[in-house]
Length: 353
Image 1 (spheres, one colour):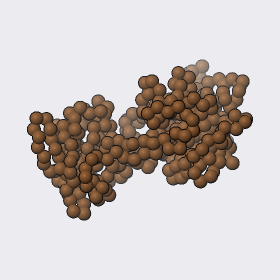
Image 2 (cartoon, rainbow, N blue to C red; image 1 turned 90 degrees about the horizontal axis):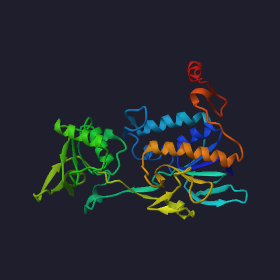
Image 3 (tube, rainbow, N blue to C red; image 1 turned 30 degrees about the vertical axis):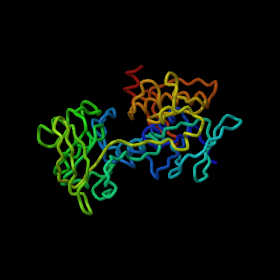
Image 4 (tube, rainbow, N blue to C red; image 1 turned 45 degrees about the horizontal axis):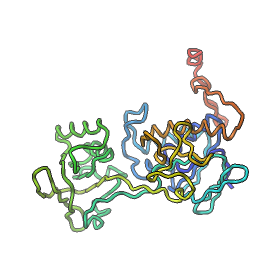
């Protein structure tokens, strides 16, 4: 039996940051993740994808963000159960929970924090009759290593942030980038839309809207795609390419967590954001992309905020009746579980005092 203070289900960015925030409160964490390594989607799906909205980082690759978070929480010595899926949960008479994985590993904790991101997922595929014939032969639904597109002709389809961000990133890698979207309007961040328009004006991105890819041409590998363009002119034409990357998002599934008696709404766990992101079951929290509440934004930095408040509530559950006085790390420094001590700079402490 693995025992801990906070059992975190999901070792993505939000789960990893929870370890740090809990550590500041002297709370021990253990993480369960079905993937073989920490980082969640950032490690498994797009480690080389640039992220632009992490504070203090104008741009950081998803994989590098994972490395930084692991470095940050290392001092608090988190435990990991990787390559195993959280399968069942049972509440004990003493109020603690026992979570058992699909491989039979048991974990016990008074607080469970579900930080499972989008859960298990699979890419949404466009309705092209022969697309499966070209999977891993020029058709990719997820970009893991942008170097495979070096000096290649790439067609990206989609209208969200992933399509926009990868079009921008690959404009300096591929020999030719074409972005196709079925509407003139994009769903991504305005800043990304403006960057794509700017790159189009500079001739670094071909932008075709409103249009959609309706066919793939090739023998053993993608050679071209067939495009149907609308806007008063119904016409079809081919574009030569080496790779076709449809980025239409992921279809998420909660998996076994959906059977834990939690309140679910549109494949997400309902939480009370007015308090502490607790679910309808006291002692079980949901933070990050896996939860939902009025005004919810699925951003990594929002997950960081939710993790911080959740840890404060967890402290009260684990230490009933004990008052915690919030201290800024600039004043208090950081005590790691490994015995290390990072002192706050004396000049900063004196300035604050």
